[in-house]
Amino acid sequence: MCARIMVHIGFDDTDSPRMGCTTYVAALIIEKLSEMNVQFIDYPNLIRLNPNVPWKTRGNGALCLRVSCEDSIYSDIKEAVIEVVEENSDLEYEGTDPGIVFLRGEVPQEIRDFAKRTIQGIVGKGEALKLIRRFGAEAIGYKEGLGIIGGLAAIGETLDGDHTFELIAYRRRENWGTPRKIDESSVIEMDRKMGNLTFNNVDPETGRILITPRGPDPVLYGIRGESPEAVKLAHEMIRIYEPIDRWVIFRTNHGTDAHLKTVYSIKDVKPYHPVIVQGRVEGTPRIIPGGHVIFRIKDDSGAVDCAVYEQGGSLRKIASELIEGDIVKIYGGVRPPSSINPMTINVEKIEVISLAEKIVFQNPLCPVCGKRMKSMGKGKGFECYKCGFHGANLTKVAVKAERDIRPGLYIAPPRSERHLTKPFSRYNLEKKWAGFRIIQPEDFWAKCSAL
Image (cartoon, rainbow, N blue to C red; front, side):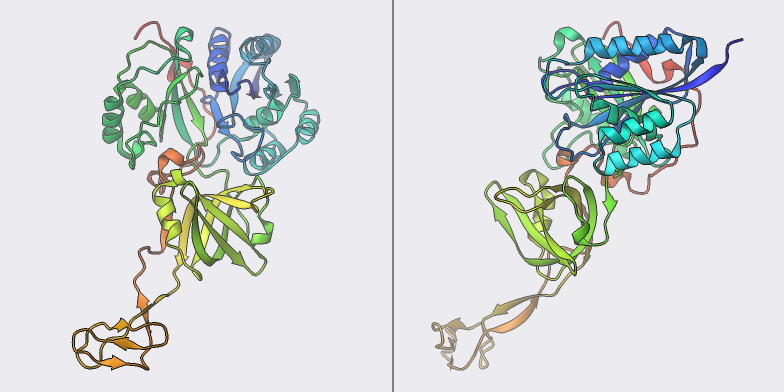
């Protein structure tokens, strides 16, 4: 009897802005593996990596499939995976550099640590290759082979902590690049019925449907939620007017804030890194052309600009209400300096820790009749237009003003959230995974023959 082995298959960077989707490549590989004598030991893993790296494609997602198989078919599995990746990668596009990694056995702690660094920072291909050689993994790279980094990271992120699920439905090839035919009212109805079991289906500020992408990729829609049962039920509520080719349920780090890392001083804020950092607001926020709000925070180690862009909606209003002396914690990705702008944190969340007193200066009240007086000109005092009293020596008085914001956490609306940003609905729903378990393909995958 042939021994069974555990195999982790990681891959990344098969798509381009003009075509493709690495999750779709995963769906095609799942179909191939389902025809072989393998057992899936986890849902397909969709791992979003650092969203701030400059060479990413769209959502910067890498994939890992984890299976148990007989050692005798390991070579067949590799051959099947390589064939699908080669046939479905946009290799002619500059910047598409696919990579595949195969790891047998348990996932070493060093590869888990590598995955965390890839999600929260910047790593190089050399570091990935050293780990691959050290632990006897195998890697195949195309062109620059940068997808090897994401492939190894997807293997290393085993989602032992918080995680969510996403059901992605795919279009038939003849419909790629055409408008998606989906009943938007059914999405709104689904969102209402599912409550916090799913998230980021509809933007509450604009009513925009968020489950459908806009590009020419194969995805019809993606529904994110707290369990495989929830996303499957939500999927069954959607009314569509084009056939679905297939669908897959992924286990993922979407909506977990996995990318954000606390730094304890502003001097440690680095370009391209997602950070959480606390500081004191310096000066007054300013609104620049386009409606973007820029403000500055500082601590004893330095200062850094923070930006909330126009699409930040209600978060932009919160940013504009900050004043000097407010203590805030900023969550976001760091944009490097340019010839015209300093290094800036692109803000995803603002946590107001404490508010400074806001002092405004008002004209004095009339000492005779109590009405608000009018200025008679610079240095000329004030006059009461009701009773006629003149106060040549009176000056404006300082008054403590009410603030329009309160301490608490403020998050950008769903339409401008990154894949990894944890929405309000997920707070207190964080979960732990109890380890791998054997699941059947029909639990997470289906190829459809009709509407």
